[in-house]
Amino acid sequence: MRTLDNFIDGQWRAPAGAARQPDVNPADTAEIVAESPRSTAADAAAAVKAAERAYPGWRATPAPQRGQLLYRVQRRMEARRDDLAEALTREEGKTLAESKGEVQRAINVVEFYAGEGRRLLGETIPSELPYNFCYTVREPIGPLALITPWNFPVAIPVWKLAPALACGNTVVLKPASLTPLSVALLADIFTECDAPPGILNVVYGSGGDVGEALLAHPAIRGVSFTGSNDIGNRLYGAGAARGIKCQCEMGGKNPIVVLDDADLELAVASAAQGAYGSTGQRCTATSRAIVVDAIADEFVERLEAKVQGLVVGNGLDPATDVGPSVDETQMNSVLDYIAVGKKEGARRVTGGARLTGDAHDRGYFLQPTIFDRVTPDMRIAQEEIFGPVLSVLRVPDVASALSVANAVRYGLAASVYTRDVSRAFTFVDQLEAGIIHVNSPTVGGEAHIPFGGMKATGVGLREMGREAVAFYTELKVVYLDYTGSARAGNLY
Ligand code: NAP
Picture 1 (tube, protein in one colour):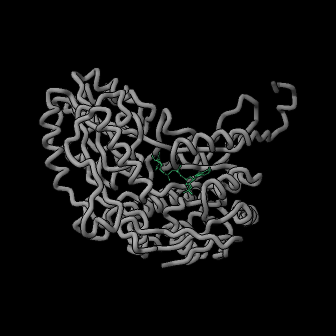
Picture 2: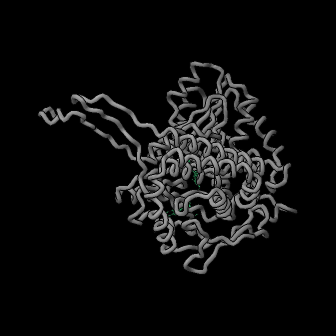
Picture 3: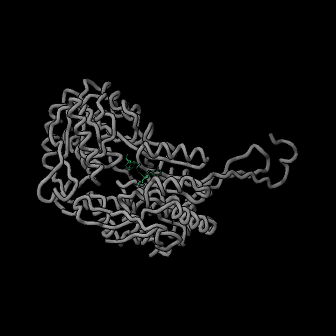
């Protein structure tokens, strides 16, 4: 068990208060993986001070050199990938294979933004004014707050801090209280790579105390948040009131649409992967399967057979397909939704209960669950469940498949399964989601490809890829009159 302090100014610093929170292994609640501080506003202020102090030096460091630090971090993460993956599984619960995938994605992100240090390009633009050289430069914003959720405790902090640092900002990161250890290992790695003190600071503690304090701090010039809608929307309002840059990536209710000409085997495999992978605790998880009537019976039958073969257990066991819910509250929230689904009259095909007996008694394990004959107005068709539950909605035709797919407030990811190119492009055109997949699952993403949602899922600019640079920089326009002739009077 590791006792964590806050990481401020390049050092592990004891918090102002003595209160600590256990980091419990959700697959084996007897194991306390770490303990993290319940920090206060004073700790948050100390971290912001460090980020403020480090900012001028880091801003002045040439961007290619900032990228060199990230290359060192990339190599160190590669060397420590097994430690990172094991810590991730122990504190979040996902399977070791899923953790290794997440760590690899984070490594790719660091590599991509290391290269961005050599590509912080501006533009030259022809001016209307004679003898004027007009160009744009990308400058950092200042000290930033990064607030992250528990479901990707390595990848999401990394996909915020890597572009933030490459662009010359300094950061204070507040990780989710449920998963503090993964970020501590990242801070260790930055230390091992001789990162300048204060460019990356980590403050543990509740969102209500530390998150709010960061957001309200006058030295914080921007905030990148990933998490739930309730918190994100409030935070966006508070950021707007302060006039600081803000991006919030939030919930999803992602559909897979299966048309009558689909490769059914492929669609069933993708639905299972999207719905039950990472225990359904992904923002991109497949939560709805919208299936045309003609093939719905066969789809449900094949899916049921597949789901019954899934092994639920401790993610450290290589035989496990589906890990636990992250904690008891999350598990109970999923069980509540299952009760709602039954009450609303959906047909439970399989699952629907907590798993007990033997090793299952030690953790928060749920049976992978399918509901059939779900209607679009039901809560289980509308609300994010964030657990291993899939709702099947049967529709008569292609047009209703499209309207049902769009009839939710979220818009993160959507998949369509068809062999007809015209239908595929119609769905690409009409689906209301930030990420569209044709014949591939709703989940996944790549370091160099933008990520984020529309409608209630996302406000602010997209994350990852080159899009992230637009969020993590200010754009400055320069007019350089190299003869002074503009003074002759043609300004307007
Ligand atoms: P959450 O409860 O909103 O928490 C997210 C972060 O915000 C945590 O660090 C939390 O701290 C902090 N926080 C809580 N209250 C706060 C406040 N008043 N002010 C500032 N910060 C505050 O979300 P979660 O349960 O960790 O994550 C699950 C949600 O994230 C799901 O809705 C999922 O869809 C979404 N998500 C979205 C994406 C995407 O890219 N669209 C990706 C992953 C996850 P504590 O941990 O201390 O509460």
